[in-house]
Image (cartoon, rainbow, N blue to C red; front, top):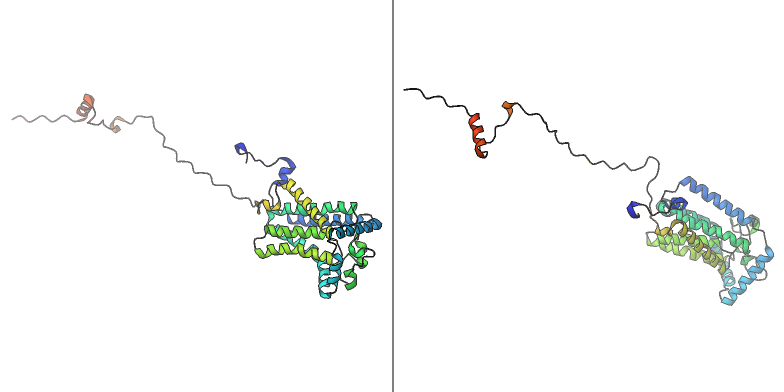
Length: 320
């Protein structure tokens, strides 16, 4: 509150955006569904620039070799030799990317309604800016590179549910590897849980989830290490957008919001009981017989005279 009790919350649309309110469940479901549909539509509508995507993949691979971090090939072949492990990673890549993200959104909605909108804005802004990368920098994943002998683990082990290989690959843009939204989303999930969870084991899981996701995207030859750096950059942009919109990061906002549902307003405070009115003073004089006599101890002769007038005269004594 500012001077004279005035609120310091910004006026206009920004002020309304920062006003704490409980998210509406049907609106959020519709918003998430429509947003992901639009994201997929735009992502898959990117012109397929295979030649440019392959050239960019060769350049990324060369940069990583110069940096000494080009270990994706060794990780891919080592994990592929353990069937149960690589099959598990294939299913991890195809499913948990969506399941965990939706689970964290539901958890925020139920347990942290005051922080939900800001956290959701981080996720949406992260995803939106990734579309810019898909348009400006088409990139083939390692499994599609020519001459590098990466293993397409989904094809080799016939993993169900992945849109990255096989017949389903035509439903998804295969050259949208930079930035990695598997990393962008998993980092959002992990950091959100780590910052807001109250139990230690949940915070540990929050840190392990993006770490394991990083291993999975490399072992399955779906991304380079540098794709993960791109995902991190998108997430930082998402946090910046939320900070500008809400004036704080999600963890800096109150956990709960006032219950603004219709008919659920708090009862008004009871008004103070006014003091009982004083009895009116009468200006009429009482009759003479009801007037109190002045005190006999009154000062001066007036008191004595009044006493004399008020007392009856003594009877005369009988004559003898």
